[in-house]
Image (cartoon, rainbow, N blue to C red; front, side):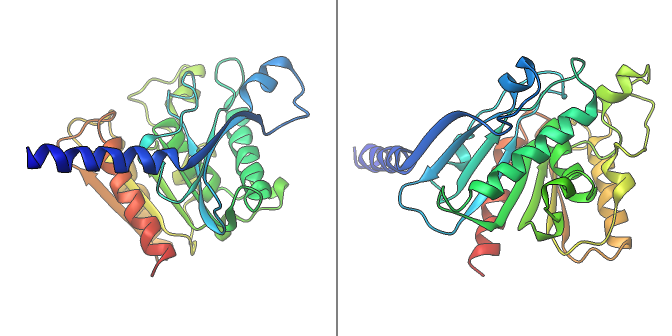
Length: 266
């Protein structure tokens, strides 16, 4: 009976924490979108603490192989004191991969521009996402050309924490060019291609190497090694054994939350 009582208290506390977040949905981050498809996809959902000021801003990109999926506000990010911006982006093959990455960059710019209004700190932006979303966060962090048109230097980010992101050229782009999953490519659409020294902590997280998608762990391990060789002072690699590509997201949120806490409350 006593255990039930404490369990009920824990559940009520979790509900209360999540309820403290104010949620706004389907906000256009590209109001001047050129066509109906862009207008429908270039939208964000936002969760923010009531009466927050100077909170970390987590920009979250959904997965789905750049060909499917939709924005969601992960429960693991709610009630943590963050401003959470969950972004949709246009999908392949309706658009080329450039449009997917450009939309992600525009969503980050929107988060930066609206951070203070939402109770966040534009100097405390964290990029994250699962799978394709992890890939997008890595591309924006390493290839400066995507955020440059918005006046953003990715070296000003608080952290980049991709969940099982693709480090080589994304498979959806390779597929559109007749390149199969087992034919790795590293070109300008590969985070690996842009490995460089950066002051921004990059936390690479994957599931167990034997049950992840193809060589996803090894790709991230290679990126980790190249970043270290480039002199990156704050890159970490986590392999979550026993968790496959989809399941790894749950424990990965624990790592993300701890890293943000350490960076904002040293």
